[in-house]
Figure 1 (cartoon, protein in one colour):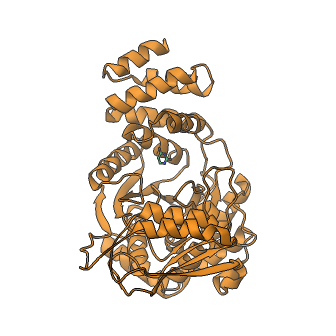
Figure 2: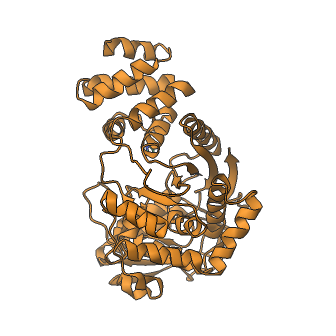
Length: 434
Ligand code: URA
């Protein structure tokens, strides 16, 4: 096979075979195919697309490019949820303990945040002592003892994705559905789960800005998961407003704990109930989605989901006292009240910009080498749809460095649109793809 022939074939809109896709992926990981030819292939895929069989083959090639997890020593039905990323999205910290308290096994490998979106691993590391770097043996032990563990990626999972993603980043080929699906599912399928529920975000805080694009992405993600033999579905959820009130690492863990205590904000509770409900249904722990929702409510009400989170924290070396006393997270040195510059309804929050404001306070990273300030972030006291009076405190900023405040405030204020009339908000859950 010659790479130049494969590039020409894709350039001219012809589908690639399984063997050709594998040859390209394996050759690129082994540095046998140079970046310039791989870049040309990515651009050809970007313009010509791929059919669903090609997408599945590229996904499987990425999955098989590195180590695959073997969870056969873990007892029970294993489930995972995956979000395409957003601002204030702490759902894994809530959904995991909920379904684990109902007998579904959660053996989760999570990612770190980059740019305006946060990552579950960073959030968990805001808990003093919490280890996200368990060995495989420790990980399986914790899961078998408590029913849940959440760790970071330490093994060499899907190296083809690492290389291809870095190349996409510098060749303007990130926004391609075949490349996005194979990147997300190539990594997901390397873990050994039976059930996968996807949370495909839509709107200004997500990388799919329109509902149509999000639905299309969800449908192909689900199709690819089914081709790999998984029980899988997707929810399309709104990311045109941040999820919940708190944005930032320790702040988001605090909000997750409050939600498991039954004090969560309505939007966060709704999304978590649906995600957990669908996991329970696919894992055969409930016959209908209505029954599943009731089960979710009951484990929040009786404290068993909160207890599960506390058990996981302790089993992974974290200080379980954080659940009862948030002072164990430490405190940001600087706290600032941000006031409304005018009266009116908040009609729109550019959610990516809100995420950027939090990043500017120190809660996120621009490159993987940046160090995160765990206590930094924002409490959004008012959100889209709320009426505010001029001079009213609408947000609280937290940071350790006062010099960060001005840029963050400018980003936050630039994100807000006001109107004199109440905006009509679309539903939070835009649909399901089964
Ligand atoms: N998340 C991924 O892992 N890959 C993409 O291409 C986009 C989002």
